[in-house]
Length: 164
Ligand SMILES: CC(C)(COP(=O)(O)OP(=O)(O)OC[C@H]1O[C@@H](n2cnc3c(N)ncnc32)[C@H](O)[C@@H]1OP(=O)(O)O)[C@@H](O)C(=O)NCCC(=O)NCCS
Image (cartoon, rainbow, N blue to C red):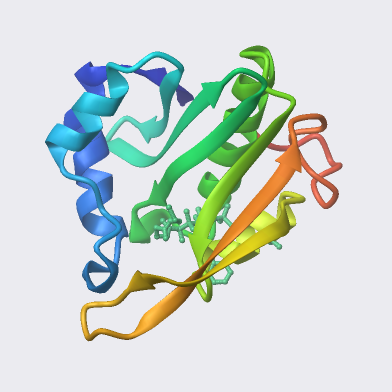
């Protein structure tokens, strides 16, 4: 099942958060940060779960005609099965429904998620040098990626698969 959820789903979201992010980059959010942002206008959470619990989530927000993907994460046990792509497609559809004509995100250069984003049709529109610092002091550029909210499946997903 995939769909929008509210603060009542926080336990499942935190389960994914704790498993999904590499501790070396400080990218995971804590419970308070998640609950805080979920109370803000224009912010929504999409969750994929099965009978056993959460598999992955995506957090996004819309401001006027532009959306931002804030976080996307899938439990390691469910990776490589299309969960991330389904979440991303669903976020793009929801962003369009909310009036956004485009969606952007920021990602650490070298993150595996870049493959997911480029498959979905995101293109690089900016680079901030040395924006992220790893736990051993090494720095990484932040890339800003953008795509239109038309055609959520993106250029490579034209087979009708995807969410819902
Ligand atoms: C990024 C992430 C959400 C992808 O989730 P996923 O469910 O494994 O993704 P999918 O199975 O839908 O894969 C989508 C595409 O990305 C590719 N991909 C996903 N993870 C990959 C990896 N670790 N290495 C290489 N390619 C990868 C898939 O091959 C697929 O490409 P294709 O469409 O060309 O076949 C997941 O790896 C994750 O939770 N990472 C840690 C959290 C994170 O860094 N989030 C991003 C920043 S907020």
